[in-house]
Length: 176
Image (cartoon, rainbow, N blue to C red; front, side, top):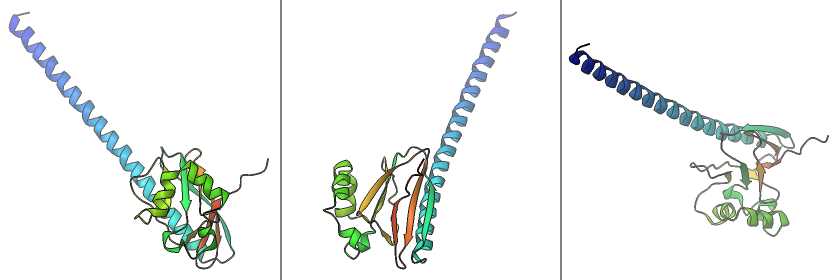
């Protein structure tokens, strides 16, 4: 082989490697963006499903509904508090001396402070914290608030219709 041919082959190999690396980087970026978009869609779907279920259950006075929600990946706990607009009007929302509330305050002081004294109207929290605040109207919690573990990306809640609001709690586990 002549020296010019060898230099030409090296140049082509370098150019091919550069194109291959650019394709890999573009592919990685596209997959990352797709993954991020799917998490955003799952989050919006979770929020809308929760809001719709609460709205529907609130109209069914005395009705009890089992709500199974799918959460985006990466969340370990779901915490629900009384709706901020109704903190003082419902009995369960005033019970800040209950042992359950005191335990919640010890386990999640930032969540309780954010709900109780925060300027946001947020009453649904995900742990670790979600970037977007979630507020679901017409929610009452018998013990002011509760947190439940997210198991395999799912959580099961109990919704009890009261006509103008919904009492939300954790669905009791099945007895074996």
